[in-house]
Length: 139
Image 1 (cartoon, rainbow, N blue to C red):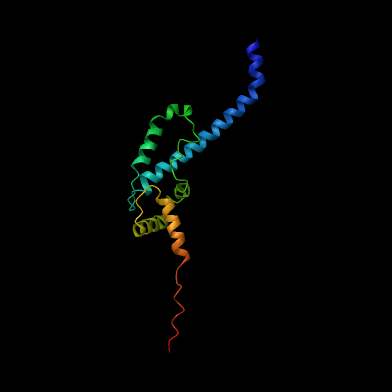
Image 2: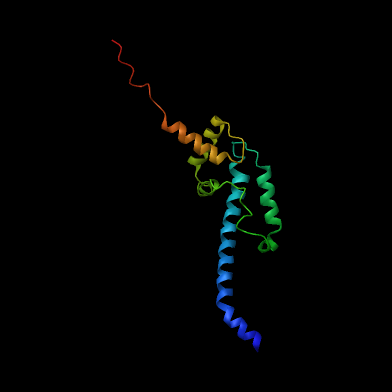
């Protein structure tokens, strides 16, 4: 009977720990799906990025998913750029996909860090256009 008393005293802690683990797993599942979409779609859809290491990471995590709880879910996807998270929401936009392809080719993005690079370069380029437009005053 003593075992049950101990279990009931720590039951709240166990439930809290299970809730934390469930939240980590849910977050991990979401990040894994986003990483897979990035590697298997955005890195090969006209913007040729070398995503072999990312695909290997995703494949490895998927193949060992049954024992994934033995890993630290918080760090398993640390090598995946966080910038891919918003790309996942854009995966069904034909307009965005066309823009992604065009800008990716223009900027010659070729690494998995491409999402970050494209955003940074695009941000720099968008801010500095048209400085000499007002110099047409010759008579």
